[in-house]
Length: 87
Figure 1 (cartoon, rainbow, N blue to C red):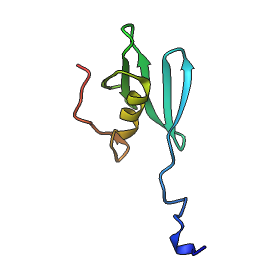
Figure 2: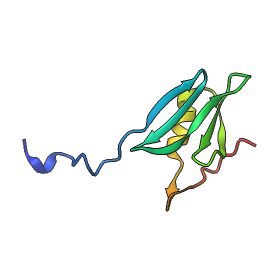
Figure 3: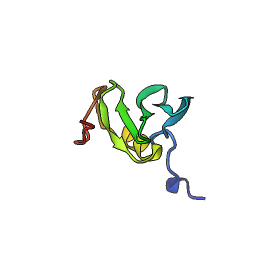
Figure 4: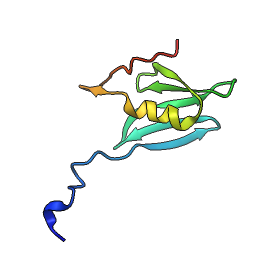
């Protein structure tokens, strides 16, 4: 196989790791860096939070909430905004 056609694994971003730490509560990290968390609300919705515990939004399922956490833009180590608030 041609070596130039293979992607350098060190240059591709690693996938986030999600851990269920309690029923209805997941914590996300990537390469040891805390990304945020998702929490199931009493009404069954899932609220996503960034690394600074700021609400990102409410979602119908935990997969969508996790995706929202992982797509929050980080610049200079500070969480950015997605333009969607929970309140």
